[in-house]
Structure formats: C-alpha cells, structure tokens
Length: 118
Image 1 (spheres, rainbow, N blue to C red):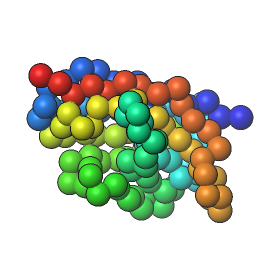
Image 2 (image 1 turned 180 degrees about the vertical axis):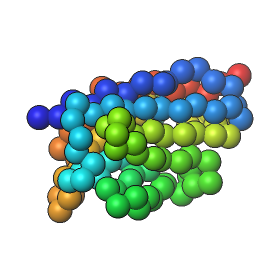
Image 3 (image 1 turned 135 degrees about the vertical axis):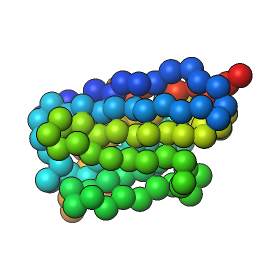
C-alpha cells in the first residue's frame, strides 16, 4: 500500500505561481509513473502532467510552457511548479501513481485546492 499526500494548494491571483508537492509513503518512482490530475467543478478529471522514473515527462496542451513536473527520489516527493496561472486552472489537484504496464493509477492522494482569482 502507498499513501500519497498533497500540499501547496492556495488562492492565487492570475499570473501568479504555486508549487504543489506530493509525498509518497515509500520510494516507488522506480516502478511507478507519477502524475498530477485536476478536476474543476462540473468537469471530468483530467491529466495535467506525468513523469516516469527515467525522467520522461508529458503535459496537457493547456499547461505546456507554464507547468513543470519533477521528482525528488531522495525525498519520495513529486512537485508541480505552476506559473502564469489562469482562472481556468482553478481545480482540485490530485497526485497519482500508476504502476508501469498498467493503464490507470492504482493510488491517489486526497487532493489540494488551487483557486486562481483576483
């Protein structure tokens, strides 16, 4: 079993920045791809960014050039640096871990609220 705990969500003005953190209860980065998802009110959960153990990353088109995902193996922590935030980035952000060779995450965090508003 793996626990994922997110932190860093906040209220921020448009154009501002936030860094989200996701701490895993044990080191799983060698066997799991780590990802950030988000869900806005009335919308489906969507993939925002993902990182593999080898360091490969991918991003949703809506966040490319603004968000950066990274992993710190020593701290069992994944980060999502969010810059140039827009009101449409407002959502609950979830950390997830997907075992290699599978299609869907096996573990989810509880979510952290990001609100972008003036």
